[in-house]
Length: 187
Image (tube, rainbow, N blue to C red; front, side, top):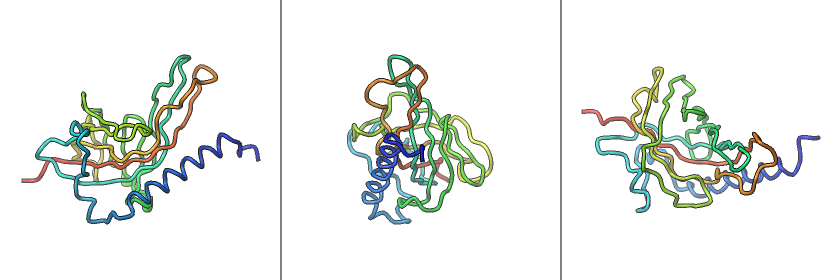
């Protein structure tokens, strides 16, 4: 069993820890809460969605943030995550990947870009919370009219500490997050 080594065991333990912490953190959440915008701590005012927007979808992501060693630092490459319908990671509803892109199982997708001068880090051991604005959408479905995306309640995903062993080395760092998708309010 060559695939079981220290590195793989550490990654599995990290993923298990993230899943467990997210499940405990969200144990009080209910389905009816999914249409409400997240409560943001004061230091995260910059990721507040502009007035006139409403939550249309809330997904729970678990996966990895991919980094590449350039010889002197780790550079971010892309996320790779699955999106789920609830905080227990039940009911896979889509995927999240390079772009950044979110794609539903029904085929609709949205590509976003970080809104300049936004973001916050309530937990310095995790990737920042972000506000993204839609660049483009494709396909009929849940992502068709998305205007903004918030990434909140992150766990893990920061760039590796220490240097890489060779130029171009990739590392996949486990992370989880919640994504809120908004559209312009009707009427």
